[in-house]
Length: 198
Image 1 (cartoon, rainbow, N blue to C red):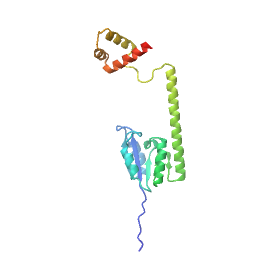
Image 2: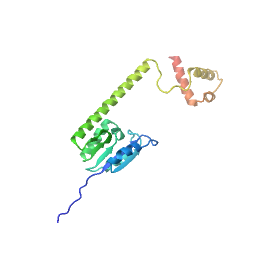
Image 3: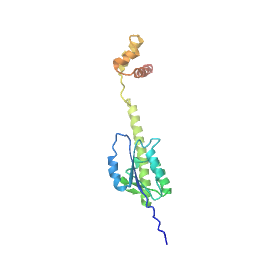
Image 4: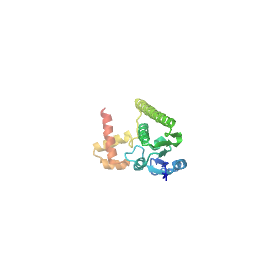
């Protein structure tokens, strides 16, 4: 008598992530549900040091399983991270399906397209980084102040400095008058003094 063994057909394991707890996963759930046997949601940044759900999913995958994600950036920290993870999974006999890109790395063609997509994403990130740096440099060159606007004007700082130097009021009293923290006032005054001395 020949015993027939049940062949493991593999699971289609969906991983979905949002950056903040107050964000909704509904869009990802609706998009992934038709493609998956199970869904594993997580909340947190892709670049967070610890991603317990993602790590648990990766560890649980067996030969024949498919990791399903909606987009590359929902699961991976960077294009390099995506490539390294895909290579590791491939060696374990696990393939990757990216729904929005219609990529399935179980085929040679899908693996090739995945490599192109991650390289394209990396190039785009470098272009964005370069354009941002160029824009900041141009803004600085024009003398425009970057960052949040100061809480105190130059006139307010000059008045505060005059009161403190003349011992007419304390840091705490002036800070309360301008509705700022005393440390904010102290720090702003230091900057103001440095500008005057330059």
